[in-house]
Length: 614
Image (cartoon, rainbow, N blue to C red; front, top):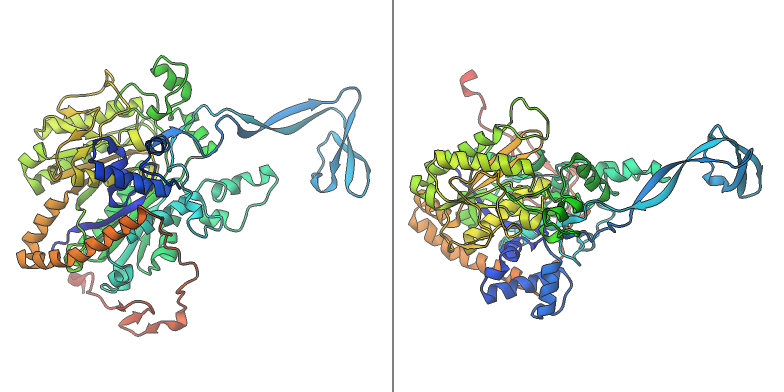
């Protein structure tokens, strides 16, 4: 029997705020929302930003100015530390200086000679040239990024213990998803076997700040030593490990699949395949990335990938860059804008969703992944995205019919704001829209607001799509006022203002991603009303009526959580060292293993995987 992967919770934290209850989406379209919904969004944002008067116009302006893409606040872009290599030459025959004994290198440079010492210092004579590193600062040529709302520090929400920022985002993001379920996690996991739960999550780049791999690589150059945590916590799959170990206490499936900018969709594909084949019944899937560091920004800038201040200003014929409009998808642009986020979804099979009375946020029809084939360069685009988008369109037509595909879908473009992307992606979308008979296909590009969160980028796109399903407002590409001349426009609509299509009017969204190295992926996300219709066809009206009765309590619990978060923050779920189970506590037999804390056992005996080869 077929199993539909149903989204029953979405949560996290990104530059627009808290993802659950569609609050981060609402920040994007706040000017088009009703007064009551906008007020709730501001109240929630105020709790994140430690503000006390969310109704005050001045504080609302502050919240707007200190969310989304903006000038970098997490470090001083006008005083980025550096070490400058300098060759010094003594005046006369020689020069000398004093240095503390403990700072003297064990092997002296060839031109150094220790000539005198006391209890604490050594006098060194230098004859000839000597190479030294002199501390200094530089201006960053890139000073825009998509950052978490000002005032919210994920590391202060729990006992972070020198966790890299990406892992802090994973803990906070997964916690928000679980806390927004409207169902207690323990009661949820009691309904399935422990090995029917899985977590799929990763950081595309690993953890590269000082508490991760960055510190390992910098330590000796800074005169320090690596810590015992840095290399372990830097691994790309560590977000999944943290969620298993400290948020969910899961002993089920786990993986961190990496595919550059398509990383979320790779993990999503694995998760829904596991649900469809029946191996898993509950999957937590999402990603966390924290690349806003001087080193990462400079590396991407050197590639020519980022929007530099000077080039941004030149686009406007100005002398100062407009940081708020750094990301300009499908317009004249000059590079993408890095951002940080941790965004997560709880996905279950349709039977469990009905049994729980869970909130139905949507479903995933499928995810398609294709490589580019032979390439001229690793970062350059290729043909793989034509295949993923073509498959996604064909599936959507099969699921919904031709009329719905043409009239009731939209596309969430990768939309990075690079000159190459605007040409190649618009050609893909235009060509395939025409092939499938679509006219005026709405193109959404949420990176204009959020920036490029790398591994979490498509998770941002899915979260925004769920918001569109619920509220019926497609965020316009408001950072642009025209399309670039080389953008392909046939069959496409690139709205520069919000489009009110009406709640429940869209049946599906196609989530598109084009990653470095030829990592292309496209997902089909189905709207809640489409999902409900599919569930009723499978389970029947009586079962769905019973779901509706159970859902009343679930909705009330989720609403209560959201109401609380409009007054005060909920601490993330972080159970360090709690509930640890040792091997001696397991009940082991030839047929099953019982794990303390889980209602059901892990079954060891399964159907023969190769029955025709017995």
